[in-house]
Image 1 (tube, rainbow, N blue to C red):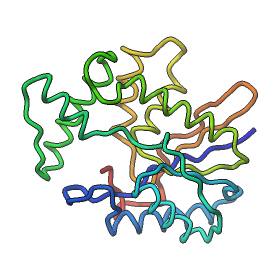
Image 2: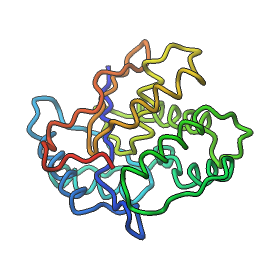
Image 3: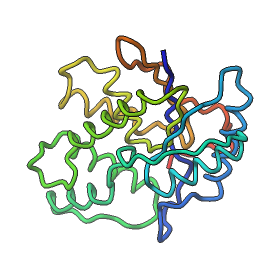
Length: 225
């Protein structure tokens, strides 16, 4: 039986010119997670992979530094997050709305949740560059590839991907569409930066063991975006 540790990236640079860069808090979250993992009773990862985004790579670098890991992490583009800017823009075009590019986190979160709810319920003909079903299928492909690696395996990815996999693992087969989307949204809105979600893989397939572990960040480093 293998174990996958799915890690959400550290805090990115919300409101900056380049969101795909860890903030100072994000770097410290990654190092803190590494130290926490090294202090656990269980074995450290023997295999690692991260998505192709800069925030994924930087989180891995911070985590490996904190844990004292000398592993080389492979890159798998299937672990990339969905393009939230494209989702927001397409939803605005469909509804006649305007995307607010300001830095008001509460206003952005409200707009984000409304737009992604429509995206997750819309079919492939709604004009989104990556339809929701294609995004979920990509996440499933990434999970299968990681499950075939020697374990324990650590994966650094994004919250939307982890939420999609968690939803797939708890929603019965055939529950896609009206059920899967809302479950995904529930998971996606509560994932803390550098949280750990554990998936066990055995003869009967993959199962969700834990979701959104984040005791290492405490209150001072706790962020959700």
